[in-house]
Image (cartoon, rainbow, N blue to C red; front, side, top):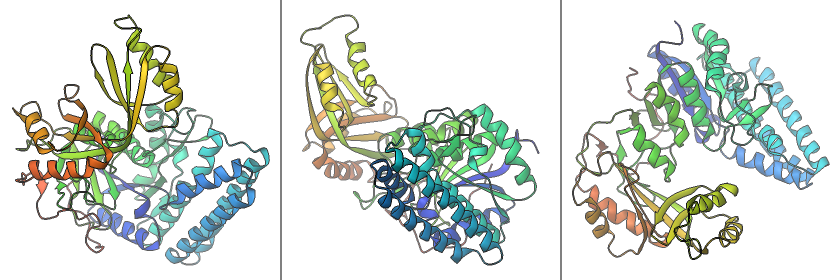
Length: 489
Protein backbone atom coordinates (compact mmCIF):
# COMPACT_ATOMS: atom_id res chain seq x y z
CA UNK A 1 0.00 0.00 0.00
CA UNK A 2 1.35 3.46 -0.84
CA UNK A 3 1.62 6.32 1.63
CA UNK A 4 -1.27 8.00 -0.18
CA UNK A 5 -3.73 5.70 1.58
CA UNK A 6 -2.99 4.11 4.97
CA UNK A 7 -6.24 4.43 6.92
CA UNK A 8 -5.22 1.61 9.27
CA UNK A 9 -1.95 3.28 10.30
CA UNK A 10 -1.93 5.03 13.66
CA UNK A 11 0.92 7.21 14.89
CA UNK A 12 1.17 6.97 18.66
CA UNK A 13 3.14 9.55 20.64
CA UNK A 14 3.98 8.80 24.28
CA UNK A 15 5.14 11.60 26.58
CA UNK A 16 7.83 11.50 29.22
CA UNK A 17 5.59 10.21 32.01
CA UNK A 18 4.46 7.36 29.73
CA UNK A 19 8.07 6.14 29.40
CA UNK A 20 9.50 7.37 32.71
CA UNK A 21 10.40 3.94 34.07
CA UNK A 22 10.02 0.21 33.41
CA UNK A 23 6.45 0.09 34.73
CA UNK A 24 5.36 2.98 32.50
CA UNK A 25 7.03 1.44 29.45
CA UNK A 26 5.23 -1.86 30.12
CA UNK A 27 1.92 0.05 30.15
CA UNK A 28 2.90 1.71 26.90
CA UNK A 29 3.72 -1.68 25.38
CA UNK A 30 0.30 -2.98 26.44
CA UNK A 31 -1.40 -0.05 24.72
CA UNK A 32 0.54 -0.61 21.50
CA UNK A 33 -0.13 -4.35 21.64
CA UNK A 34 -3.83 -3.56 21.84
CA UNK A 35 -3.60 -1.51 18.65
CA UNK A 36 -1.68 -4.23 16.84
CA UNK A 37 -4.15 -6.91 17.95
CA UNK A 38 -6.92 -4.87 16.34
CA UNK A 39 -5.09 -5.16 13.03
CA UNK A 40 -3.66 -1.63 13.03
CA UNK A 41 -0.20 -0.69 11.83
CA UNK A 42 1.61 1.51 14.35
CA UNK A 43 4.48 3.95 14.40
CA UNK A 44 5.49 5.03 17.90
CA UNK A 45 7.09 8.37 18.80
CA UNK A 46 8.45 8.79 22.32
CA UNK A 47 9.70 11.65 24.43
CA UNK A 48 12.70 11.41 26.71
CA UNK A 49 12.04 9.75 30.06
CA UNK A 50 10.45 12.20 32.50
CA UNK A 51 12.83 14.93 33.75
CA UNK A 52 15.70 13.72 31.54
CA UNK A 53 15.57 16.74 29.23
CA UNK A 54 15.82 19.12 32.20
CA UNK A 55 18.80 17.19 33.54
CA UNK A 56 20.55 17.26 30.17
CA UNK A 57 20.01 21.00 29.92
CA UNK A 58 21.44 21.41 33.42
CA UNK A 59 24.46 19.29 32.45
CA UNK A 60 25.01 21.38 29.32
CA UNK A 61 24.75 24.61 31.33
CA UNK A 62 27.20 23.32 33.94
CA UNK A 63 29.67 22.36 31.25
CA UNK A 64 29.25 25.75 29.59
CA UNK A 65 30.14 27.38 32.90
CA UNK A 66 33.28 25.27 33.15
CA UNK A 67 31.90 22.88 35.78
CA UNK A 68 33.05 19.65 34.14
CA UNK A 69 32.67 17.48 37.24
CA UNK A 70 29.13 18.74 37.86
CA UNK A 71 28.13 18.07 34.26
CA UNK A 72 29.58 14.57 34.30
CA UNK A 73 27.91 13.81 37.64
CA UNK A 74 24.51 14.63 36.12
CA UNK A 75 25.31 12.44 33.13
CA UNK A 76 26.33 9.58 35.43
CA UNK A 77 22.96 9.74 37.20
CA UNK A 78 21.17 9.52 33.87
CA UNK A 79 23.41 6.66 32.75
CA UNK A 80 22.51 4.61 35.82
CA UNK A 81 18.80 5.31 35.40
CA UNK A 82 18.74 4.24 31.76
CA UNK A 83 20.83 1.12 32.36
CA UNK A 84 18.61 0.11 35.27
CA UNK A 85 15.41 0.62 33.27
CA UNK A 86 16.78 -1.38 30.35
CA UNK A 87 17.77 -4.21 32.68
CA UNK A 88 14.21 -4.45 34.02
CA UNK A 89 12.66 -4.67 30.56
CA UNK A 90 14.94 -6.76 28.37
CA UNK A 91 16.43 -10.21 28.98
CA UNK A 92 19.56 -11.86 27.66
CA UNK A 93 20.92 -12.23 25.05
CA UNK A 94 19.26 -9.05 23.68
CA UNK A 95 20.08 -7.12 26.86
CA UNK A 96 23.83 -7.02 26.24
CA UNK A 97 23.41 -5.35 22.86
CA UNK A 98 21.04 -2.74 24.35
CA UNK A 99 23.35 -2.01 27.30
CA UNK A 100 26.28 -1.58 24.90
CA UNK A 101 24.25 0.95 22.88
CA UNK A 102 23.39 2.89 26.04
CA UNK A 103 26.98 2.87 27.29
CA UNK A 104 28.21 3.98 23.86
CA UNK A 105 25.78 6.91 23.78
CA UNK A 106 26.70 8.05 27.27
CA UNK A 107 30.40 7.80 26.47
CA UNK A 108 29.82 10.15 23.55
CA UNK A 109 27.69 12.45 25.70
CA UNK A 110 30.45 12.65 28.32
CA UNK A 111 33.02 13.46 25.63
CA UNK A 112 30.73 16.21 24.40
CA UNK A 113 30.33 17.67 27.91
CA UNK A 114 34.10 17.60 28.43
CA UNK A 115 34.56 19.48 25.17
CA UNK A 116 32.01 22.13 26.15
CA UNK A 117 33.72 22.59 29.52
CA UNK A 118 37.13 22.86 27.86
CA UNK A 119 36.11 25.71 25.54
CA UNK A 120 33.76 27.28 28.09
CA UNK A 121 31.10 28.02 25.51
CA UNK A 122 27.67 26.49 24.92
CA UNK A 123 26.19 27.21 21.49
CA UNK A 124 22.60 26.48 20.37
CA UNK A 125 23.93 23.81 18.02
CA UNK A 126 25.80 22.08 20.84
CA UNK A 127 22.81 22.40 23.18
CA UNK A 128 20.65 20.59 20.62
CA UNK A 129 23.24 17.82 20.43
CA UNK A 130 23.32 17.38 24.21
CA UNK A 131 19.56 17.49 24.75
CA UNK A 132 18.91 15.08 21.85
CA UNK A 133 20.32 12.20 23.91
CA UNK A 134 17.12 11.97 25.93
CA UNK A 135 14.99 10.88 22.98
CA UNK A 136 17.79 8.93 21.35
CA UNK A 137 18.12 6.77 24.48
CA UNK A 138 14.43 6.41 25.36
CA UNK A 139 13.51 5.34 21.82
CA UNK A 140 16.18 2.61 21.85
CA UNK A 141 15.00 1.28 25.20
CA UNK A 142 11.32 1.37 24.24
CA UNK A 143 11.99 -0.36 20.91
CA UNK A 144 13.91 -3.14 22.66
CA UNK A 145 11.19 -3.45 25.31
CA UNK A 146 8.53 -3.76 22.60
CA UNK A 147 10.53 -6.45 20.87
CA UNK A 148 10.98 -8.32 24.15
CA UNK A 149 7.20 -8.06 24.69
CA UNK A 150 6.50 -9.62 21.30
CA UNK A 151 5.39 -6.44 19.50
CA UNK A 152 8.22 -6.59 16.93
CA UNK A 153 9.62 -3.23 17.95
CA UNK A 154 12.48 -1.76 15.95
CA UNK A 155 14.40 1.44 16.55
CA UNK A 156 14.33 4.11 13.83
CA UNK A 157 16.61 7.10 14.38
CA UNK A 158 14.33 10.13 13.97
CA UNK A 159 17.22 12.12 12.53
CA UNK A 160 17.05 9.97 9.41
CA UNK A 161 13.47 11.12 8.78
CA UNK A 162 12.78 14.50 10.41
CA UNK A 163 14.65 16.93 8.16
CA UNK A 164 14.85 20.55 9.34
CA UNK A 165 16.63 23.81 8.71
CA UNK A 166 19.53 25.12 10.83
CA UNK A 167 17.44 27.04 13.40
CA UNK A 168 18.92 25.23 16.39
CA UNK A 169 16.62 25.10 19.39
CA UNK A 170 13.49 25.59 17.31
CA UNK A 171 14.19 24.05 13.92
CA UNK A 172 11.68 24.36 11.09
CA UNK A 173 10.81 21.03 9.46
CA UNK A 174 10.89 20.41 5.71
CA UNK A 175 7.68 18.45 5.23
CA UNK A 176 8.43 17.49 1.62
CA UNK A 177 11.76 15.91 2.56
CA UNK A 178 10.25 14.34 5.67
CA UNK A 179 7.61 12.54 3.62
CA UNK A 180 10.28 11.26 1.25
CA UNK A 181 12.51 10.07 4.11
CA UNK A 182 9.60 8.35 5.86
CA UNK A 183 8.79 6.56 2.63
CA UNK A 184 12.42 5.48 2.41
CA UNK A 185 13.10 4.52 6.03
CA UNK A 186 9.80 3.94 7.88
CA UNK A 187 7.47 2.49 5.27
CA UNK A 188 9.57 -0.64 4.54
CA UNK A 189 9.62 -1.44 8.28
CA UNK A 190 5.86 -1.03 8.54
CA UNK A 191 5.29 -3.26 5.53
CA UNK A 192 7.42 -5.95 7.19
CA UNK A 193 5.00 -5.94 10.11
CA UNK A 194 7.42 -4.18 12.44
CA UNK A 195 6.62 -1.36 14.89
CA UNK A 196 9.09 1.49 14.32
CA UNK A 197 9.93 3.48 17.45
CA UNK A 198 11.30 7.00 16.95
CA UNK A 199 12.42 9.71 19.32
CA UNK A 200 10.29 12.83 19.19
CA UNK A 201 11.58 16.41 19.42
CA UNK A 202 14.78 15.70 17.47
CA UNK A 203 15.70 15.91 13.81
CA UNK A 204 18.66 16.81 11.63
CA UNK A 205 19.42 19.30 8.90
CA UNK A 206 20.22 18.17 5.37
CA UNK A 207 23.88 17.77 6.35
CA UNK A 208 22.92 15.39 9.16
CA UNK A 209 23.63 17.79 12.03
CA UNK A 210 21.30 17.17 14.99
CA UNK A 211 18.55 19.73 15.62
CA UNK A 212 15.52 20.00 17.90
CA UNK A 213 12.00 21.23 17.23
CA UNK A 214 11.59 23.24 20.44
CA UNK A 215 8.88 23.13 23.11
CA UNK A 216 6.23 20.53 22.36
CA UNK A 217 8.53 19.04 19.76
CA UNK A 218 7.60 15.42 20.40
CA UNK A 219 3.94 16.15 19.67
CA UNK A 220 5.04 18.00 16.54
CA UNK A 221 7.20 15.04 15.49
CA UNK A 222 4.21 12.73 15.78
CA UNK A 223 2.10 15.02 13.63
CA UNK A 224 4.85 15.28 11.02
CA UNK A 225 5.14 11.49 10.90
CA UNK A 226 1.37 11.12 10.71
CA UNK A 227 1.15 13.65 7.93
CA UNK A 228 4.11 12.21 6.03
CA UNK A 229 2.69 8.68 6.16
CA UNK A 230 -0.94 9.81 5.59
CA UNK A 231 -2.00 8.03 8.77
CA UNK A 232 -5.57 7.29 9.76
CA UNK A 233 -5.07 8.85 13.21
CA UNK A 234 -2.53 10.53 15.46
CA UNK A 235 -2.69 9.68 19.16
CA UNK A 236 -1.07 11.81 21.86
CA UNK A 237 -0.69 9.63 24.98
CA UNK A 238 -0.19 11.57 28.21
CA UNK A 239 -1.06 11.10 31.90
CA UNK A 240 -4.48 12.79 31.72
CA UNK A 241 -7.79 11.59 30.30
CA UNK A 242 -7.84 14.14 27.50
CA UNK A 243 -8.58 17.85 27.24
CA UNK A 244 -10.53 19.11 30.25
CA UNK A 245 -12.99 22.00 30.49
CA UNK A 246 -10.42 23.70 32.72
CA UNK A 247 -7.44 22.86 34.90
CA UNK A 248 -8.75 20.31 37.42
CA UNK A 249 -6.15 21.48 39.92
CA UNK A 250 -8.06 24.77 40.01
CA UNK A 251 -11.60 23.48 39.53
CA UNK A 252 -12.40 20.10 41.05
CA UNK A 253 -15.49 19.52 38.91
CA UNK A 254 -13.70 19.95 35.56
CA UNK A 255 -15.07 17.71 32.81
CA UNK A 256 -13.40 15.75 30.04
CA UNK A 257 -14.17 17.17 26.60
CA UNK A 258 -15.14 14.29 24.30
CA UNK A 259 -14.70 16.15 21.01
CA UNK A 260 -13.31 19.49 19.94
CA UNK A 261 -12.33 21.19 16.69
CA UNK A 262 -8.77 21.78 15.48
CA UNK A 263 -9.30 25.52 15.76
CA UNK A 264 -10.54 25.33 19.34
CA UNK A 265 -7.68 23.04 20.36
CA UNK A 266 -5.11 25.41 18.86
CA UNK A 267 -6.55 28.36 20.77
CA UNK A 268 -6.53 26.39 24.01
CA UNK A 269 -2.99 25.17 23.55
CA UNK A 270 -1.66 28.64 22.85
CA UNK A 271 -3.45 30.16 25.82
CA UNK A 272 -2.18 27.83 28.47
CA UNK A 273 -3.60 24.30 28.10
CA UNK A 274 -0.66 21.96 28.70
CA UNK A 275 -1.95 18.85 26.94
CA UNK A 276 -1.23 19.87 23.38
CA UNK A 277 1.23 22.14 21.59
CA UNK A 278 -0.33 24.35 18.88
CA UNK A 279 2.08 23.25 16.15
CA UNK A 280 1.14 19.63 16.78
CA UNK A 281 -2.10 19.87 14.93
CA UNK A 282 -0.96 21.77 11.84
CA UNK A 283 0.04 18.74 9.72
CA UNK A 284 -3.12 17.00 10.91
CA UNK A 285 -5.28 19.98 9.89
CA UNK A 286 -3.69 20.04 6.45
CA UNK A 287 -4.66 16.42 5.80
CA UNK A 288 -7.76 16.21 8.00
CA UNK A 289 -6.20 13.51 10.21
CA UNK A 290 -8.05 13.18 13.54
CA UNK A 291 -5.93 13.65 16.67
CA UNK A 292 -6.75 11.89 19.94
CA UNK A 293 -5.51 12.93 23.39
CA UNK A 294 -5.41 9.80 25.58
CA UNK A 295 -4.19 8.57 28.98
CA UNK A 296 -1.55 5.84 29.07
CA UNK A 297 -2.43 5.22 32.73
CA UNK A 298 -6.09 4.70 31.87
CA UNK A 299 -6.06 3.29 28.36
CA UNK A 300 -9.74 2.32 28.42
CA UNK A 301 -10.76 5.97 28.56
CA UNK A 302 -11.83 7.35 25.18
CA UNK A 303 -9.96 10.63 25.66
CA UNK A 304 -10.59 13.66 23.48
CA UNK A 305 -11.02 13.58 19.71
CA UNK A 306 -9.79 16.62 17.79
CA UNK A 307 -11.14 16.90 14.26
CA UNK A 308 -11.71 19.48 11.55
CA UNK A 309 -15.35 19.97 12.51
CA UNK A 310 -16.75 19.27 15.97
CA UNK A 311 -20.49 18.68 16.58
CA UNK A 312 -22.60 21.64 17.80
CA UNK A 313 -22.60 22.32 21.52
CA UNK A 314 -25.46 23.96 23.40
CA UNK A 315 -22.97 25.74 25.65
CA UNK A 316 -21.11 28.71 24.15
CA UNK A 317 -17.82 27.48 25.57
CA UNK A 318 -15.91 24.20 25.48
CA UNK A 319 -13.00 25.10 27.75
CA UNK A 320 -11.48 27.75 29.96
CA UNK A 321 -7.70 28.14 29.88
CA UNK A 322 -5.42 30.39 31.86
CA UNK A 323 -1.95 31.68 31.09
CA UNK A 324 -0.07 33.09 34.06
CA UNK A 325 3.16 35.03 34.65
CA UNK A 326 2.26 37.68 32.10
CA UNK A 327 3.05 41.38 32.00
CA UNK A 328 0.96 44.26 30.64
CA UNK A 329 2.98 46.91 28.81
CA UNK A 330 1.19 50.26 28.43
CA UNK A 331 2.57 52.44 25.63
CA UNK A 332 1.24 56.02 25.44
CA UNK A 333 1.93 57.88 22.20
CA UNK A 334 2.70 61.24 23.76
CA UNK A 335 5.09 62.37 21.05
CA UNK A 336 4.05 60.40 17.96
CA UNK A 337 0.25 60.59 18.17
CA UNK A 338 -1.32 59.82 14.78
CA UNK A 339 2.14 59.54 13.20
CA UNK A 340 2.41 57.23 10.21
CA UNK A 341 4.37 54.09 11.05
CA UNK A 342 3.92 54.41 14.80
CA UNK A 343 2.38 50.95 15.29
CA UNK A 344 5.10 49.37 13.17
CA UNK A 345 7.76 51.09 15.25
CA UNK A 346 6.22 49.71 18.45
CA UNK A 347 5.97 46.15 17.22
CA UNK A 348 9.45 46.30 15.69
CA UNK A 349 10.81 46.73 19.22
CA UNK A 350 9.18 43.51 20.41
CA UNK A 351 10.37 41.76 17.26
CA UNK A 352 13.91 42.97 17.86
CA UNK A 353 13.92 41.32 21.29
CA UNK A 354 12.08 38.22 20.02
CA UNK A 355 9.26 38.65 22.55
CA UNK A 356 5.85 37.29 21.57
CA UNK A 357 2.75 39.41 22.19
CA UNK A 358 -0.35 37.58 23.46
CA UNK A 359 -3.01 40.30 23.39
CA UNK A 360 -3.28 43.85 22.03
CA UNK A 361 -5.68 46.60 23.04
CA UNK A 362 -5.62 50.08 21.47
CA UNK A 363 -7.18 53.47 21.96
CA UNK A 364 -6.64 56.78 20.19
CA UNK A 365 -3.59 57.60 22.25
CA UNK A 366 -2.28 54.36 23.68
CA UNK A 367 -1.50 50.71 23.08
CA UNK A 368 -1.53 47.99 25.71
CA UNK A 369 0.06 44.61 25.02
CA UNK A 370 0.58 41.50 27.10
CA UNK A 371 3.76 39.43 27.01
CA UNK A 372 5.36 36.61 28.97
CA UNK A 373 7.22 38.12 31.88
CA UNK A 374 10.79 38.40 30.64
CA UNK A 375 14.14 39.74 31.72
CA UNK A 376 14.10 41.60 28.40
CA UNK A 377 11.36 43.99 29.57
CA UNK A 378 13.75 46.72 30.82
CA UNK A 379 15.47 46.80 27.41
CA UNK A 380 12.11 46.80 25.64
CA UNK A 381 10.89 49.68 27.82
CA UNK A 382 14.11 51.61 27.15
CA UNK A 383 13.74 51.19 23.37
CA UNK A 384 10.04 52.11 23.46
CA UNK A 385 10.74 55.19 25.58
CA UNK A 386 12.32 56.79 22.50
CA UNK A 387 8.88 57.00 20.87
CA UNK A 388 6.40 56.82 23.78
CA UNK A 389 5.84 56.89 27.51
CA UNK A 390 6.01 53.32 28.84
CA UNK A 391 5.06 51.49 32.01
CA UNK A 392 4.57 47.81 32.71
CA UNK A 393 2.86 45.69 35.36
CA UNK A 394 3.73 42.05 36.07
CA UNK A 395 1.94 39.19 37.87
CA UNK A 396 -1.02 39.16 35.51
CA UNK A 397 -3.04 36.22 34.15
CA UNK A 398 -4.83 35.83 30.84
CA UNK A 399 -8.12 33.93 31.04
CA UNK A 400 -9.31 32.51 27.72
CA UNK A 401 -12.79 31.08 27.05
CA UNK A 402 -12.97 29.00 23.87
CA UNK A 403 -16.04 27.88 21.92
CA UNK A 404 -17.14 27.48 18.31
CA UNK A 405 -20.01 29.98 18.26
CA UNK A 406 -19.35 32.72 20.79
CA UNK A 407 -20.70 35.44 18.49
CA UNK A 408 -23.91 33.48 18.00
CA UNK A 409 -24.88 33.74 21.68
CA UNK A 410 -26.53 37.08 22.48
CA UNK A 411 -25.48 38.65 25.77
CA UNK A 412 -22.57 36.30 26.26
CA UNK A 413 -20.14 39.06 27.29
CA UNK A 414 -22.56 40.32 29.90
CA UNK A 415 -22.91 36.82 31.35
CA UNK A 416 -19.12 36.36 31.46
CA UNK A 417 -18.41 39.59 33.27
CA UNK A 418 -21.36 39.19 35.63
CA UNK A 419 -19.81 35.87 36.70
CA UNK A 420 -16.56 37.63 37.58
CA UNK A 421 -18.07 40.92 38.71
CA UNK A 422 -15.92 40.88 41.85
CA UNK A 423 -12.68 40.75 39.81
CA UNK A 424 -10.85 43.75 38.38
CA UNK A 425 -10.44 43.25 34.60
CA UNK A 426 -7.50 45.06 33.01
CA UNK A 427 -7.87 44.18 29.30
CA UNK A 428 -10.52 42.51 27.14
CA UNK A 429 -10.32 40.91 23.68
CA UNK A 430 -13.02 39.21 21.61
CA UNK A 431 -13.38 40.61 18.11
CA UNK A 432 -10.07 39.21 16.88
CA UNK A 433 -11.40 35.65 17.05
CA UNK A 434 -14.83 34.14 16.61
CA UNK A 435 -14.02 31.33 19.04
CA UNK A 436 -12.06 33.07 21.78
CA UNK A 437 -12.98 35.59 24.44
CA UNK A 438 -10.03 36.65 26.60
CA UNK A 439 -9.39 39.07 29.41
CA UNK A 440 -6.50 40.01 31.66
CA UNK A 441 -6.71 40.02 35.46
CA UNK A 442 -4.44 39.88 38.48
CA UNK A 443 -2.73 36.50 38.81
CA UNK A 444 -4.00 36.16 42.39
CA UNK A 445 -7.60 36.41 41.14
CA UNK A 446 -7.28 33.79 38.39
CA UNK A 447 -8.31 30.66 40.29
CA UNK A 448 -11.40 32.25 41.82
CA UNK A 449 -12.41 33.70 38.43
CA UNK A 450 -12.07 30.33 36.69
CA UNK A 451 -14.14 28.54 39.32
CA UNK A 452 -16.87 31.15 39.02
CA UNK A 453 -16.90 30.98 35.23
CA UNK A 454 -16.93 27.18 35.26
CA UNK A 455 -19.87 27.00 37.64
CA UNK A 456 -21.74 29.49 35.44
CA UNK A 457 -21.16 27.95 32.03
CA UNK A 458 -20.87 24.24 32.86
CA UNK A 459 -23.74 23.91 35.32
CA UNK A 460 -25.75 22.02 32.66
CA UNK A 461 -23.10 20.50 30.35
CA UNK A 462 -24.01 19.00 26.99
CA UNK A 463 -23.62 15.19 27.33
CA UNK A 464 -22.77 14.91 23.62
CA UNK A 465 -19.67 17.03 24.19
CA UNK A 466 -18.66 16.44 27.80
CA UNK A 467 -18.10 13.31 29.87
CA UNK A 468 -20.37 13.80 32.87
CA UNK A 469 -19.08 10.70 34.67
CA UNK A 470 -15.39 11.58 34.81
CA UNK A 471 -14.93 14.87 36.61
CA UNK A 472 -11.34 15.91 37.24
CA UNK A 473 -9.87 12.40 36.90
CA UNK A 474 -6.40 13.57 35.94
CA UNK A 475 -4.49 10.46 36.90
CA UNK A 476 -7.01 7.95 35.64
CA UNK A 477 -8.01 4.57 36.94
CA UNK A 478 -5.47 1.90 37.84
CA UNK A 479 -3.49 0.86 34.75
CA UNK A 480 -5.34 -1.54 32.48
CA UNK A 481 -4.24 -3.40 29.39
CA UNK A 482 -7.35 -2.76 27.35
CA UNK A 483 -6.72 -0.14 24.67
CA UNK A 484 -9.00 2.83 24.26
CA UNK A 485 -12.02 1.98 22.13
CA UNK A 486 -11.35 4.17 19.13
CA UNK A 487 -12.26 3.45 15.56
CA UNK A 488 -9.69 4.72 13.07
CA UNK A 489 -11.54 5.96 10.02
